[in-house]
Length: 341
Picture 1 (cartoon, rainbow, N blue to C red):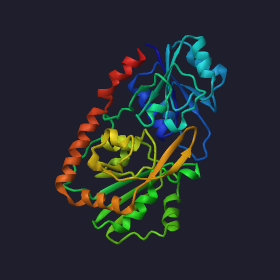
Picture 2: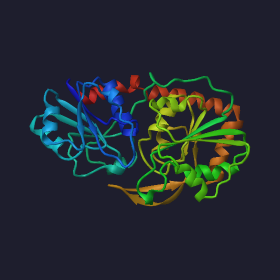
Picture 3: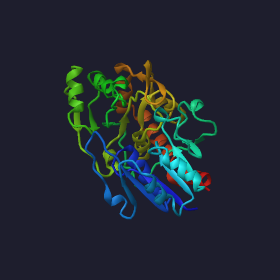
Picture 4: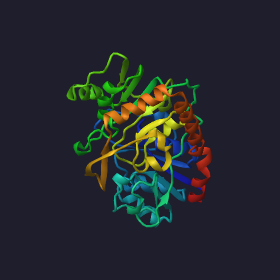
């Protein structure tokens, strides 16, 4: 099998996902699409020293050069226009589009649609294959954990551009919960947009209690797995979405993950990790979807439970270890190989 991968060169979600695919599936050829962004990005040229680099959207000549000598193509979220599907069919090259539901574009025309989660799976094109995104357990270290959690992590990532979505990962819900947390804990909040978290604190008039240490980090971490070092749990009251790489990565580090009890979180995470969610409304990217919020009291209670209940926390750590293996590349790679063969 001669496999081609379309990749992004920046250390954000789509870049990390496509880099992991190219590495773990040993792609024969890689076409790196270096697109403009509204945010300054750290471009990782060291990731792909021998790849075909394209600045902006690929042209027909770019696509033809890429397709030469391969028989299957993988791309995540997008085909960067319609040329890839058109020319691949002419060249009898099969294509797999690993899409995200909210950005699912009905004009795209891959050979196979692949869904990273079962979120809204009933609305995907006929024949869609469920293909979970594996965890790079060979990169993510599992550190010894204490008897209860004291260091909590919240990953903002890149704030959503569409105002009607609000902040996608539920950062406001977390900030509003902090004054209600009774335990002595440290909360680290990472964000790729400097000043964003501080503005939320001011806009929502949040006063962080003295017994909580709040660390705000607005830096791009070159190696994503370092985010989870020294942490004991991830707080992610995410409002919507299927694939969530921080949740995958945290589980890979052996961390329990606090998320809302909504689809698809409740299809793969233990129920006792999840919190009650309240439907907030609907929004649209390329598809319509429902988004939720988490009550601060509910979130604070779950944080305190992980910080005080030894039995609960140690069981959660054991459950994370089991999920780490279940969703590792070692476990899921045969599923990928079967699909591409």
